Amino acid sequence: MFPHTSTLLCQSPLPHCTQQGGGASSVGFFNGPRIRQPGPVTELDGGPSGDFFTVLCVAQGFTEDQWMNAHAFSLLRPWLLASSAAPGDNDRSDVDGSVVSMVSATSSSSRLLAPRERLREKSFLYAQRLIEQSDRKALKRADSELQKACLVEAVLILDQVCLEDVSQVFRAFPAVKALYGRLSPELGAARVLLAVAQFYLNHGETAAVDCEPVWRLVFGRLPAELFNDPHLAHSLLRFTRLHLHHLQPRVVQYTQAFPNLLKFLAWDSPAVLEDFVDLLPSLVTPGTAVELLHSLLDLPCLSAAGGRAQLSLEAFRSPAHRGLFLFLLRAEAGSGDTIARLATLHRLLAEAADWPRVVQAAQAVPVLLHVYFNAVVANEKLLSQLVSVLLERSSLLFNIPTFIKEIHRVLSFHLLRFCKLRPSLVVDQSHELLEFAGTTANAFSKEAVFTDVVWLLGEVLSGGSDPRCSVELITSCFESLEAVLFEVTSSAPPPGEEPVAPRVITSLMSALAKLASRSHDLIPRVSLFLSKLRAAARGGAVVWSREEDLVAIVTRGEELCSLLRLPGVAQSVLTPPPRGPRWHRDLNVAPSLQLRALSGLALLH
Image (cartoon, rainbow, N blue to C red; front, side):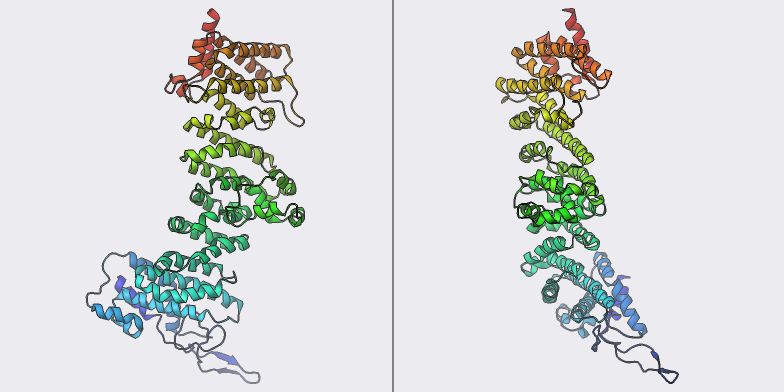
């Protein structure tokens, strides 16, 4: 079947049939209809077409074989792909090897080739002819678009032919290189340039040519200048996904270009989010990971800057703020992880917080953060850098309330996950974690992150989990958390903030009790503090919006005080060994049940 069909296809795009088909009728001014004699077909610029009819030839009527020529061209590349994947040999047993090596020079000798070889030869000549024809300037805009579409197909046909027969690379490269040189100065033929990039990717190493200018165009100028073109966004991201296994190891510009690629996401995140879910892990490298995280968190700002509101445009022109926008709109990575004046940038772009495009970009960030963190979780050295970034950026987010809340939830989840997988991170980053947990304002504005940081400090800081965890570190942590608990329970919340959540209070109480159980000198201090807090809550000095919140805090205080009366028991309950009892390992078993049971035992003494 394949040899027969290949033979038929070879017969269609032949170098003949250059006369117009049928008698084209025209009407004179004073007389009736008259029949014009068929004339020669022309090129798109009106010039004579020569002796080779292609789909880029123009005529008022077409012959049957000319129509067949066009139909054959539409099937050519799919059939090349199908025939290359078909089992069996190339049916060349009846053709002498020396003849096969000679026939590629002329089309007349190609009939000596086996069907698949003939198909490749005819396809090569046809595609080469289309590239030559594209040098002519079309008279109509529709014809110009036809030229571009045919060029894409022609370059892809040459690419497929060269994949099947590597000896054709040196024969094809001059035409493709000349085409790139002609089209690259202007970006109107971006889809053709992507096809050329595919050819360079597959055959540039074989031909030993410098591909860097091509990649600077594909990942540099194209997204930087045409980020708002939905067709280019789809084509470029699809090209990247299809060739990712080649781009990662060969093209350095790919991973360095993520600030440019994110512009597609900032402009129309719903349309390209699925592409970025697939591509994002390939952009995470030790050299780009931290900068990429900052860029993802700043995606709503990038979307706002791309919209260019009047205020942001004026700010962009201001010498004092121009540097902020130049960094945000940079084309490649490597100029720094982030900027020092993010709060100023957020203020300049504040008017865009409710723009639909900005809101859509903000909604995409949590999804991408999950993908990002899943990609870095295996790199322990990288995780150590990211902990401090997570804590820092929890305070520096674009002011969209739902965005901030959702990002805090995602950051909290993965911070907890990282430290559970690598408990040594808590000691490595103890200074940053203590600084964050020791800042009272964080208890009000970052409840999710703050609560999990407090839990980590109370859960992990023990000599049993890490020998570097000294008594001095435990005491320092205890004093910081004690001061925060005292402040949040004895003073009014900052202006504009809600009262601190009961979950924050109970997490601080539990963390203090855990730390005291590992340094018994601290037990009197925490017992006295918890007793005073319990008395203040019962006396109405501490007010929460719901009665059940007050009951929960008082109950937790009583449980912890009772447990600390038996230091040995408290240590076994509050300091889990590496493989401790089931209630330490099974999240489905509530620790409060054990606390209440042991509290009852303590009250008997």
